[in-house]
Picture 1: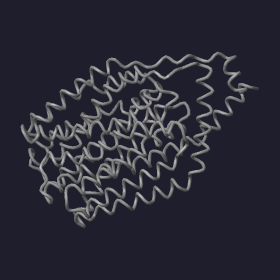
Picture 2 (picture 1 turned 30 degrees about the vertical axis):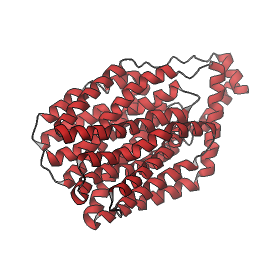
Picture 3 (picture 1 turned 90 degrees about the vertical axis):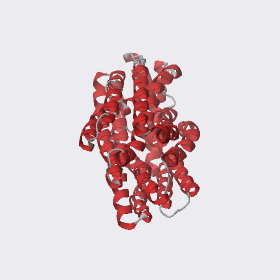
Picture 4 (picture 1 turned 120 degrees about the vertical axis):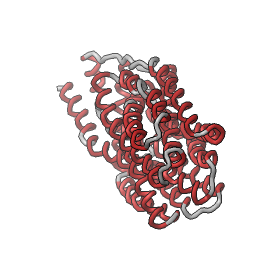
Length: 413
């Protein structure tokens, strides 16, 4: 009877997870849709505002620097207090910031607006990732992959909307992004009470299991995981920033074609993230993370060896597919390493990791200005190799199994 009670209680927690998991995916899509407008705008800002490569890359740094500073703090706050309203606040800030860019003329004003976008993303990610875990049930890899897919879809949709809007209405077309932003904020605000209830239930269940198993936070394992995560962030951020510029400056394509390459990469990343977590639930998280770093460093070098945009695109797609295979599993694995600090783990593996890539962008921009964009890709290839070395150190945590008597005791608490 008690065991049956455990089963019924688990089902009660899992019942809404399917739908709320996809809602978390849509929220992540909206937040990253606004963030992805920044790299899509870079070719237009270079053209219309006269920015050089280092200045353009500095805009990627603007949001990432602020985000990296406060992301761990916000993750800790998410672990201590139930604040699902931060998801709506973060998304709204990203929409306001990206819309303002189209109405600004001076570099430092645009720089400040991009920082505001980064701050909004920093506010959203820890709480959004924590809630995605709360509604996941037993399928942590699948749920976190759904959440990551949402971000990748946002990076795919954002450049399309941005390029079309700016091409049609000029730089002020960035205001179009406020339409989906306000719609998502309205949905999240209307469901705040349900989010709080689901969060408290998931937290109570997690604490019961941790009390019985005695599992502790493994910060050393988290550190080793971060080597591969940060390497992927630098490579992914570098590709997102410089591939549009590479298409225009080296492969002689239009600004629109350069901006749409962000969409090509984001769609490839979304497809990869969708299957990555599902594979990880079956064969293990660490195996998928290692698989993700096997091919990126030679594929990046191959891109520099062709002058054909078609061939380069054909190489970009498998590159991004493989690179992002382990993104969802990395987030889920980080949460396994820090089971009592889900917000902190999410802030590091998902939020802070994106910031690291943005912080590296200005350094890569200086390399591009001094030595050319192909050299930037060579550097990214080397970083991808470091990521492979880091991935070899990652192992799945050993979680003690509950004995039947312990399960009964947990259920009775």
